[in-house]
Image 1 (spheres, one colour):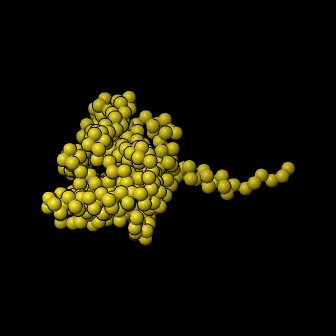
Image 2 (cartoon, helix red, strand yellow):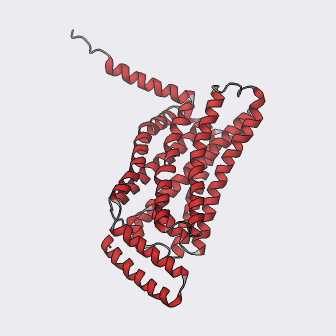
Image 3 (cartoon, rainbow, N blue to C red):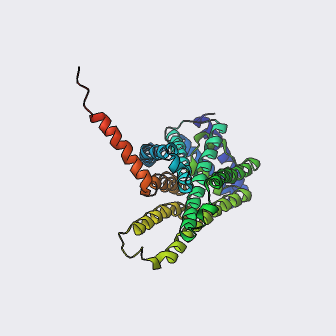
Length: 352
């Protein structure tokens, strides 16, 4: 099935829905018919310039992420002294999730901008991997904050509470949770037959978000529960940072605004803000869309901004504002760059 066949199908469906609406005067039919019309317009008359503009942030973030994330992962996994520490194991897992998300989302955005159709199974698999990677990064970020919380407030019991062997089990548990949450959501979508073939061929995540808000009550409930779980994890991160600040402000480490603790706290909260902001904007957009304050097309452009800008930024800011703050990692990276530079500028041996 191609986009033109999808367009013909949606036009026929929209006409049928409008005829039913004329007979029953049902507002739900008007909404559904409008939705079909929008799908047809999006499939047949996409706005190439605007779509390509929204492709720029994912591509730029992917390039920046590919330049720094593999280097940090190499430093973590190549050094046993670094690899055995809980904070570095969690950091490596978070960066791996972010790299996977950047790769798959940029691929998805590029295919959508190029109007390349995908089989239904490929699109569902791509969406599932994106959801797993996003949840994995978010859950691991929460685990990093909990690890910092325990290390600062319970320094004498830290090694007993979180040894490296237990950290590996925690990481496995985080991956299981990251797969279970989107897995339940996709099962609900599949059981309610809420997947629209044309949308799955386009595999446009912003459009799928809008369709989810226009779906059945079960799909809406699952969507809001998933969003609330993510919001609770972000709230956990914020609460841990707040408790750490109030517990340590008497120690004197916050006296200077340029102190290492203050700068680190500011950077971590910057990353936290960029994790929070997409959800807040999504909640506002969902509220306006459900209450018919904004239209379908406006909802899609807002969803594009959320997916292609706001949800991408934390993935590329995390290694720069968080990973490079660790002295061991930054020192190892500088050592690697220095050795490579010396190797490039070293004079060739003179002939004997």
